[in-house]
Image (cartoon, rainbow, N blue to C red; front, side):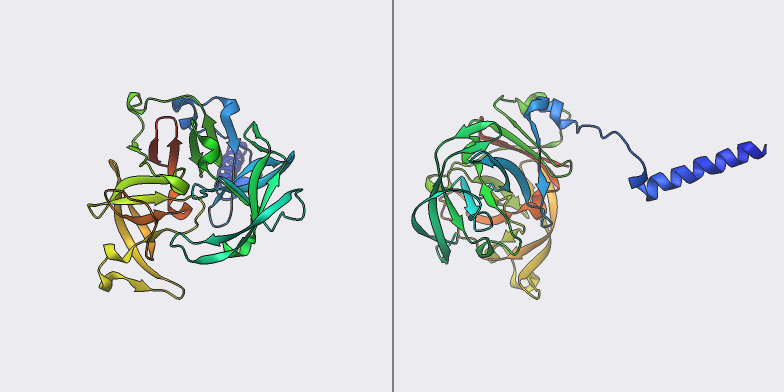
Amino acid sequence: MEKIVVLRKTIIAMAILSVFVPQFFSFERLEPDWIERLNYRADELYPIKLQINSIPLVEVKVNGSNVWVNFDTGCSTGFSLTSAVEDTIEHKVTGKSTERNPDGSYRGETTLATIASLEVFGVTYAPVKTSFTDWRIFSILKFNGLLGLKYFKDKRVTIDYKQKKIGITDKPFVYANDKKFSGAVVPLLEASGSQADLIYVLGRIRGQPTVIYMDTGSSASFIDPSMLDTNEIKKGERYLFIENVEMAIGNLAFTVRQLRVKEQRRGVNFEYPQTVKLGSDVIKDFLITIDKIDNKLFLAKN
């Protein structure tokens, strides 16, 4: 009888430890179900890292060397580097340029350059035109560079912030055939010029149609003050903001806890104005698939 009591106490103690001290136990981590259901093979999956501000990082090869860069759907040039790696990556300077904000205002100076090669998830490009910019004009966190959607034409890309995985395939997918996924499938709005590879979708703010710009390279999300009543805007130490904003993309409704209030002036001519920018602070709560094969966005709560 005494042995049974001791055994019971041991089992209870182990159960408590497994909850409060998980680092003492090893559990097999199951693959998330989207991998099979969105028709990804094991060799089409890659790890990502997350900065403390939730911006995802992916690994590329520059001149044969591994470099972690921000996966930035707001990077219109496709690929750029920063002063953090300028002294360690061999390059040929080709000129100078001025970096500007979306509204056209001055941001800083950029060194234009050419590198021998860039490998993006097994595909090599050579030579590659790029640039080196002081990382401090973009962020308070040091980073090596930016990789945009220019290198994912005719690809389907799924980002899972929670599992820290990215899936990349050239296989199309018929979303209507999967009835188990509760999410939204909406067309990507067609932009031109320097914004052709950025993500714009039609959504709703409090039932009002608007264009939403989705930027994984941004750590914050924004709304244009034209969508708000002035008495609901709050003043923080560093910026104006609004809380608990009801939004929808397709049939997927959700509430954003906080949006910073700032004029949105992206130069795109859509039927509705672009008044919202969603960054990784919001996108991280979703499983997001950017389908450049069928020009669709699939968004599901994660």
